[in-house]
Image 1 (cartoon, rainbow, N blue to C red):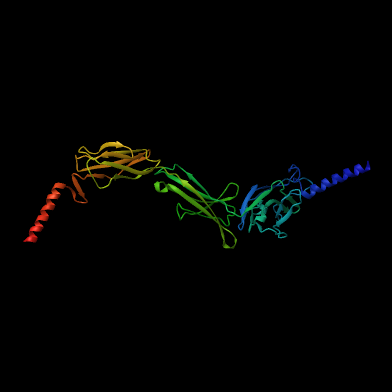
Image 2 (tube, rainbow, N blue to C red):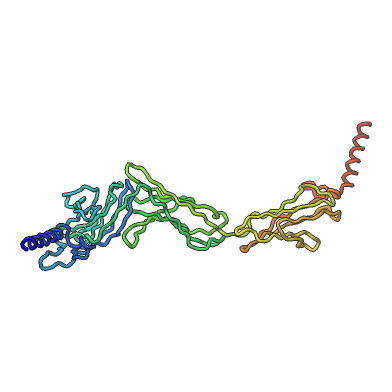
Length: 378
């Protein structure tokens, strides 16, 4: 019986020691009283060779008659504790008093104003771990064991993000934004993109105290914007080096037909009865939905066919027939230049001189030859 009583006393003693050793709130998923809460991200990522700014504020909890209270008029020190296993006692990696400085950290916030913002420099992947914050405001001391911060340090930078607001249609104005995660506002990434070379980088603070670097442009779209744009984020790291990541997106800009043209096959003079193929070409997005052919007449342009290709047989009625085509989609249309189909049996076309009947050309040519022979004999 005495043995059981002694065992019970020992168990109670061990439990009390554990409570003191780990501080309230460590065990049983923080279901015990904790005298310090911090407001900070639960998880943060950083880039090796760079730095990380930890936005942090703390709230001391009301004391009990048996404990002291936080007093902002007293000297206050901030402590960061690192642990990878909560079942083991945590170890201090930084104390703003200067007693411990295992990690390259600096508290930039004013602790007497409950601001525990911290700058973590020269990070490596070995710094990836779970961290806890502690306040020492003698005789008040408390650790925020219920508010751990998980820091993950990566070797590769984050790809920037490209966002587009507005309709991707010709003549419409849209805002295009490239943004990059900025874990350290003291050493932000430099953003560049193919959209415009001299875009100004802006850094914005997020609601959780972290930062984002952005470049933004408002553009009036044209068919020239249809295609890929890329944005790269260049992160400075130690020893003057950089780590770069790039994102590429495709702008699918809708536009009316462009570069509409008509062509003829066969080219040159066409004999009566021969087949002629006229082809209309154009680029558009969405693609051209209709091609319409027109022929010149005494009453003006006359619609003769629909379709990308118009085929017909040459007649003896005229020496030249002129045609053009119109390409259209839901955003508009564009007309080609005139093309001329020349009848080989009636006329020859000389650039800049117009049409000459063949019989007149033959008579003229014969006359010139006879005159030359007369002069030679004479």
